Every structure is written in structure tokens, then in C-alpha cells.
Length: 464
Ligand code: ATP
Ligand code: MG
Image (tube, rainbow, N blue to C red):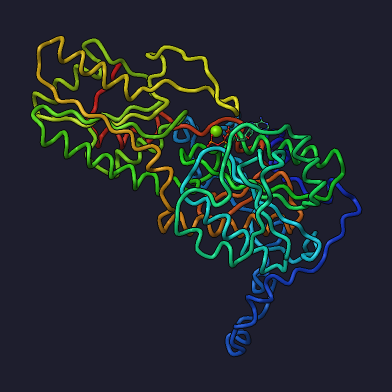
């Protein structure tokens, strides 16, 4: 069908041979290292084939949607095919290829981290460096402080090797530093040409990926044999089509410490109310998951679900009800929630993102005012753990995710893909064309089962 064709066209990822017809490939030796330790006995019983060598075939695919809906009704909002007949949708499987498009000794690879901090950045940097070295790449550099490092002459590129990155994952932050704003795309590509960089690994969020895709387009225009590969960094987990992004799991885990403190404070005070603000500019995944995980939240507020503070069905009168019945209450609010209540600041950061008003402080003030107004005692405490969470080191599950994403980013670049990003989809690792995943932020569906599970767990009513 036309739908299927459109889909396939959109998900066909850019290959370096599409840009450069004369690009030649070389046999990869990457997997030979993996083959050596295999005991002959074992090898005899299982005949060797492609898979056996560990290489991924360029035509290998991963199913994008694993549920088979038997009718349009059971598909509900998830039915994206207009005719609602089921269409299988596949994306490219990540991993090492047998043929590679760069001679390792001719590669100069650069890594750059942009935007805000997120647990796991160092883990990804580390694994990219280690994997590049296994391929035999000698020239690996870090670009300091995001895209800015391409134009600021005072910032020297940082030579990277296994020795340099060996222990970086033991601390949070980014070894290379991050920034917002910076040079134009053509300035970045000029700088890359000057430095003879032919592989660029870009770790960042939607803005950074928009930049990475623009850099890829510019390289294509200039017919440069350069691979631009992204690793999506968003603590908010708001990237389309991916099971989850690195840092999210750690954030949810850390958020619970803040929630638990708020709970203890609220519980130990007479008519205590704890308010915790968590990350989530346009999607409430962290707030929702942390509320579900902690079991200590009475009210969870996210950007996707409108609510009223005042009025008989508002958050404040529910808080009064909770104090009367339970004696205390804990609220979890995502930073992007309830922005309508706040005065527009109309300010933007260096990257052009709108600066949000502080909904946490607003709710704290309104709660205090409300209970003072009705002469009802309430002890309100507010916790904003944002910067403490962002600066954490990755937990075990994120550490693994970062490791596999880092390895696959390098495999993708060597396979000759450019303008792609790596992700995990239905538990398998895949490559996506960048525009497909940043077209809009992934959001919590208010009709989804997960959000309803959260409501069931908090016991909160609709606040409209
Ligand atoms: P976070 O989720 O932490 O905000 P981000 O990647 O979205 O991460 P931004 O500050 O928005 O962070 O952008 C990072 C970098 O990408 C900045 O240097 C910015 O100049 C650049 N950038 C953002 N949007 C674009 C775009 N549309 N085209 C080119 N470059 C962009
Ligand atoms: Mg962003």
C-alpha cells in the first residue's frame, strides 16, 4: 500500500554510498576478535554462518510494533494506519557489519556532548572510545563544551584513548563539558574539514540531533565522506519510537529519594504537604514512573494532562481532603505541567528553547495562600532535586544501555551510515534516521494504560 511505501521511504536510513557513489568498502575485522575464543568442539556442532561470525546483515530488521491488534477497536489510539489493516513496520538492526566504509587508520573520530547533563554521558563517551580503538582507530578526540568547541579557539580538542576514559563512568557529568548555543552549521562543518574529522559522534537531545542532521546534510552537500551518528540523550525519555533513553532509569531511581524525603517531611509534620518538582519539559514520564515506583505520591501532575488548582475539583481542595482524611499529602509535579498558570516569561536560552516558569514554586505559594485563606493549618515543604539528579552517575541498567548504544554508534559509523541515531526498540538495538525520532517529543498518552495505572496508584481524581 501507499502507506507502507511512505513508511519504508521514511525509514530507509542514509548510507554513505548514497552520497558518494565511489565510496569503497573494506572487510571488517571487528568480529574476528570475538571469534577467536570459540572452542573447536562447539564450532563443529554448530555450522558457521553469517550470524555465527556476529555480523549483522544490512537487511536485518527489527519490528517496530510488536502487538498484533485483531481489530481497530483494540488498537484504539495506536492505530496509525489510516485503513487500520495491520502493517508490519520494520527498522534497521544495529550492530557490526562485515563490510565497513572507513579504513580504521584513516579515521579521525570526534565526540561532542551538547545540551544539559544526563546520567550516562561519560559511559557513552567511554564506550565509543573503546570500540573505536578495537576497530583500530588511532585518532580520537573530544570536542569541549558542545558545538561551541568547534568555533572557540581557546578550547583545544581533547585527545581520547582507553587510558583517558577508563574510569570516567565512575562519575556523573560529561568529561567533555556541555553547552547550549554556539556556531552555525556551516561553521561547524568548516571546522570539521579543517580538523579532518570524518566520524562525528553527537550526544545530545532534540536540539543537538536537529544540529547533527543539519551537519549531515551539509556534509552531503559538500560531498564529504563523513559519518554523523547521534546517541539520544534525554533524561525525560521523550524521544519517539525508543523503549527508553539512557539516564531515564537513573533519574527515576534518584527521584524516589526526593519523593521519600518529601514523604517523611510531610508525614512527620502536622498537616504536612510535600511538593516535589521533577524534570519533564513536555512529557511527564519521570514524574509518572517515579510516582508509580515510590507508591508515596498522592497527586501526580504532568504536562499532558490539564488540571485546575482552584475550585471544588481543583488540586487544592483535594489536598484539603487528604489532610483531613490522611493527615498528610505528597505532590509530584513535572516541570512542564500547568504552564498556563504562570506568567509568560518570553525568554529563551542560548539554544532558543523557551525558558519555563517554575510550576513547583507556584504550587507551593498557592498552597500556602489557600490554606492560610481558609484558616486551615498546613505545613508546606518544597523539594526541587533537578540538578542533583542530572549530575548523578548512571545506575547499572543505564550503564549497560550506554555501553551497547556507544558500541552500536561506532558500528553504525563504520557501516557507512550517516544522519542516524541509535536506540533500543522492543528490546533490540536499532538505527533510526534522525528526523524520524525528533519530529516531535514523545509524550505520555492520557488514555494510555500506564497513565491509568499511575492514577490508580495515587488515587487522585480528575482535576478539571
Ligand atoms: P536538552 O534536552 O538537554 O535540552 P538539547 O540537545 O535539546 O538537549 P539544546 O540546548 O536545545 O539541547 O541544543 C543543543 C545544541 O544544538 C546547541 O548548541 C544548539 O545551538 C544546537 N541546536 C539546537 N537546535 C538546532 C537546530 N534546529 N539546528 C542546528 N542546531 C541546533
Ligand atoms: Mg532539548
